[in-house]
Image (cartoon, rainbow, N blue to C red; front, side):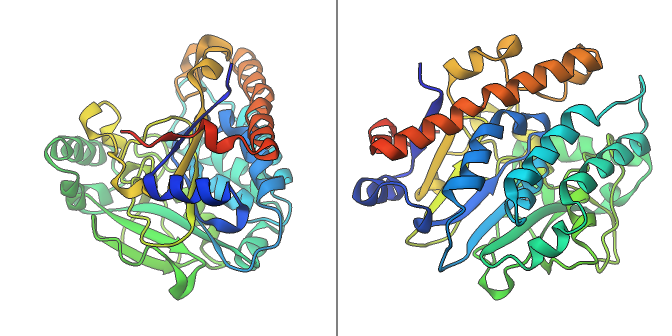
Length: 355
């Protein structure tokens, strides 16, 4: 049984056949939204962040994420990324305990404490001063009704956004605007994005924590976040606009390495149930997607990847045991990738990208 599924766009497949997978060839590493789903990537992230990408680099590696994906990227950009990951996994599993019907304030406070554990005392400075990691964090700034923190108005804006999205993703611009906070300066490869209104801002010591919290602030579940230096409006979960990051990654000679929960990509949060809205691969010509295989997922507790519904389906103790087992089992993902690289058999397992 293979634990991994590997898919590559045509440009990536050509490069992999010529050189194999090399850390120095990777230009961009995306991290998708998905809440508890990040736990299934724990073993793969430990190998990628702690071993494969740990060697010195001569050119920057651009990390981009929304929601929990941005938290993963924040782990990679710390001095000891594996330790940051372990703090994050522990906090996400064991520090999330809620009353029966938690308010948005309660959920926000719990996840703020989890984020503080991930960053520790030095994480912010380490991210900003990292010698080669350039972090990009996506948030969604509320516009119109979505700029309100009143629950009824916010719910109305979400309903309008979902209805408009059925016709076109571009309609989301009526309710939200994409912000990308980053540490790349003029080197960012995302300056050209025009599919949705996009604003770029620098990450700073004053705003980084708030930006990371905002990137995971699901409307109606958490409070919106006001970010220092952005005087207007509140910011929400970046995954509302960019759920799995179906972005134009731009031209380049290097690879986009995409460790992902699934073998498919969903553009926005409102597209989850719209099977015709799956990414078609145009943006992933130079991407290698690495995901848990169907067989691996079937071996997990309840035969599925963790998700937010587990909070309602299980008591805390059961959920914690289940999620911890997923983290433990996920070591097989990192082990399999390491073996494929060591034996030179990775390219033999890669399939061409398909929707």
